Length: 420
Ligand SMILES: *[C@@H]1O[C@H](CO)[C@@H](O)[C@H](O)[C@H]1NC(C)=O
Ligand SMILES: *[C@@H]1O[C@H](CO)[C@@H](O)[C@H](O)[C@H]1NC(C)=O
Image (tube, rainbow, N blue to C red; front, side, top):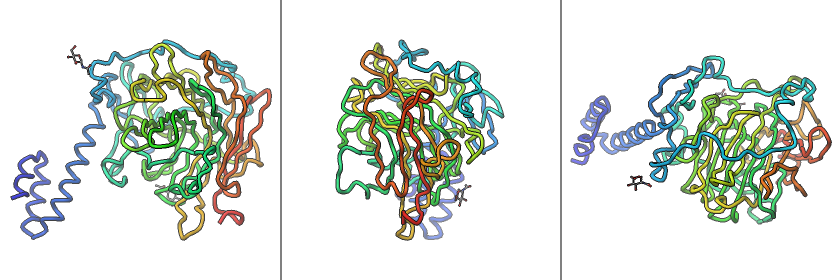
């Protein structure tokens, strides 16, 4: 009878027929489990994929849906039911570098600014936001429907809490630069873009900035943005733009991109989770992206800008506890998962897959690091520190000069004769 009760709420007739077929075949428990999973995947897809006014087929297999700005997933949040969308930040911090000038300056050390692959196939109209459509396979690759679009817990580098279990924390490995001990209201960097090799589908490699508030316990607040290669999340090895947020150390709150209610996007140009194109080549052309995250001192929301003029949108202040005031740590750098296949260190690359010593065109960089200070100005960070768990696997080298300001090279190949 349990079967009949479940069947009565079905909308997918084909599923019902298959199920009853299996029921008659005596496979009731397995079929009920499968049916439940199909239903919850279908329900989750309907929640994520909003009706669109136009859809664009990208050459990497993605479908980009142009969704009316007021129909995006953020507005499923009960606290956002009456929200008035902010179409501009009330405040924009001014910094040391005028990017518009840099963009037209051929001498930008040979590095070019870039955009997204799907732009070759079309653009979204004004008043809509481009959203990468989630496919059934995307959800099925996750450990569960509930975990889809969420990081596994505790993946923030904690350089200043030298805990004994540090290296073994889920196999996360980092090579980062960071500042802490002050109040920060944002951060900015120009990030070199590569497509690092990933040894196993459940590993990833990313380059990002972290804006952190609170202790590194159960209540860590984090805002993150950068690029990521994650076969588990996307089903391919493409380098993709991402954002992330959490207000409870990756437990119940937060997600990547727009995969839960949280970030409110206003840009019709750039899609979160879409492929960045082109990427840098070893001894060849170099490409980089600029990311700025800052807190609007008037409304309290945290805004994000991609490149010199794409204001992407904002995380409403109410999502956070500590970050509703300010951040206490800012980190920039790379992270990979080392799942230790066959008991040895993974060969998954970080950055370009080459060590910092190799320098421009070969090693990956972050440059023009800035933080937003208490007077809401972008300024070079004071007293930067660096951190890596195993410098024989992935390393980081910080320096500063007139051209690049505060910068560092970082990354490495993972497994090598000195890293087993
Ligand atoms: C939204 O507005 C309606 C009508 O003004 C009000 O009844 C409701 O409580 C508001 N909801 C929220 C979450 O603020
Ligand atoms: C991703 O890269 C790995 C190894 O670098 C390769 O084995 C795998 O087939 C690639 N996956 C896709 C979808 O291209």
